[in-house]
Image (cartoon, rainbow, N blue to C red; front, top):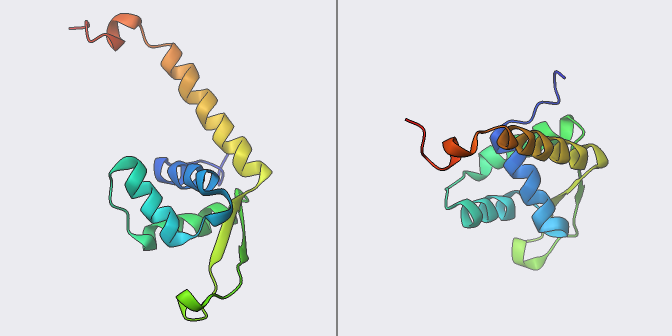
Length: 112
């Protein structure tokens, strides 16, 4: 499984790429993470995660057309690959499986 492990931040970035769908680029991802989690994230950390995830085959990217609002600079847009979708599903399944094993009393805060 080496090279395919998803850390918490990488999982968050993958999820946000899915949420933003066709408008997922570094700054937009950073802003959406902050909005959804109330946690500030440096865009450089997002870019690092995006490149790791692309190298793992979980994301693909393409350059969008240049726009005047960006001074002619093109955005690199990211999309989930089939492997990325599968990695997210596996992470969700594992979390649900583990959550299901927690005794109810522990979830209710009754354990001492």
